Length: 216
Image (cartoon, rainbow, N blue to C red):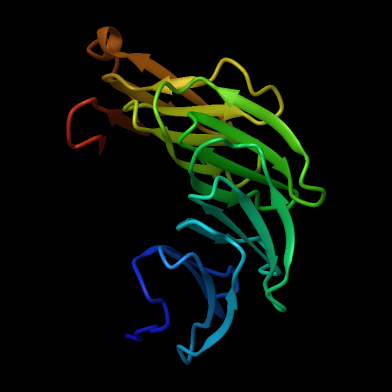
């Protein structure tokens, strides 16, 4: 086990690069720091945010870092030099979560303004603005094939979005089953009232009461 010392305040987020050689962290001290995962040495300190850094992540090829902050901005950094490459402005509240798509072409962000936003990672252009949550968006991620976005919110719901259409999101907020359909990249939602009629494999039960997700 290694301990990475360098931040002067609470660390809100940390992530490995895909190749496992580096770690990035974001802190209440408003900095993003890059570490050597093997030695624990601090390699770079990325400064530019003027609010707490709540979320950090590497791109799939480990060449870029994305960060989201209380200053309402999403920033993209060169992982090798530490230079700020892009500043993505649009959210009007805290940015709680950010992530790259696996192919590195897109970034998704979730905010206290209750929106999920999709950005072109190369130009910084806002591509889509998704408003369905009634609470703060606290977590976002892309599916591995980059076709879907999932978001979690203080409104007690998880929503899945088609990246192309980005409309009619699925809301998984009440008792029911999500069924993985074999040999297909899709899910099927079975509401609570139909659960007793079915006995199927590959089922995840989502409950509105703790524990939130229980494998069947």
